[in-house]
Length: 357
Image 1 (cartoon, rainbow, N blue to C red):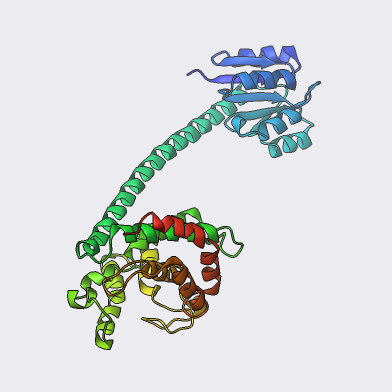
Image 2: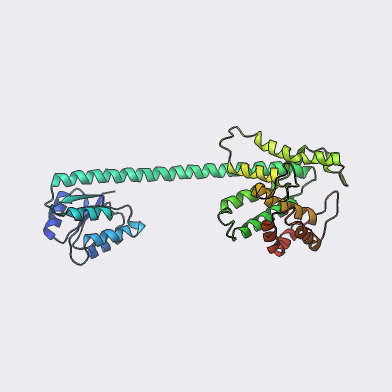
């Protein structure tokens, strides 16, 4: 494509002189800023503008301000024309976005060198932009591939529990829906609006099904026992937390560059049985020392356990389950998260009822 240059000068003589100097280019001409902007708006593919600063109607400074005000002009380079005694104008023009200046009377060799330099710079800039677009496309494709691999892996792991008839597809759907609803609600609150970015919420929801993945390592006699566990059996059951954490950590080859979703999954697995008052396991953490994913998963997991039929118990009704949650706020559950959960309990009831066994 032929290089397009716009000459803006109220002197017809100067226009003609400069046009003749640039005969090998596609040259457009304007006698003032108003005419120049009309031509520019009709020719956004202009490569370079040679702009006189001192013009009637709309001067060069005003043109520069207009060009600077809108990103659609950002790829157009401007060389300003000044007289030898206009150093202040040169500085002002450069501050307004001009890339270079040349003084009148115009020297043909100087002008041609400057134009060649800036066209070369523009070509390099365009090449970099094209390379960046290609790189972005490659990164996006690779990211999509990694996300697909992650999701397949998560579904496969959760499937191990489903095969053992411990956790059903419906349980996965309920807990993910509750996590999404709770996080989106917290996102509206001042304390959590920055923490709860859309990307972080997506990570939390995606990794929620992994919270009990370590139970694949628990013997059937304990895992599927249709009654209350003995103290020894409960100690065995508690090991599912370490089993789950180790399963993820053992797959890491570089401990310094752990994908963020792995960290999120580990925090959900490791801390969802901690209690706000410090009476939980495995570490007996208390209050805000329990990472946020664990505090979120704790109330979601307990509520789902209450409203669901399990091998060791019948399902509680919604009203009774809500009362149990209320009574446990401040002891088992983070008060702020607990209150937020109760604020959307009607919506949660609707969501979970669609996926009850």
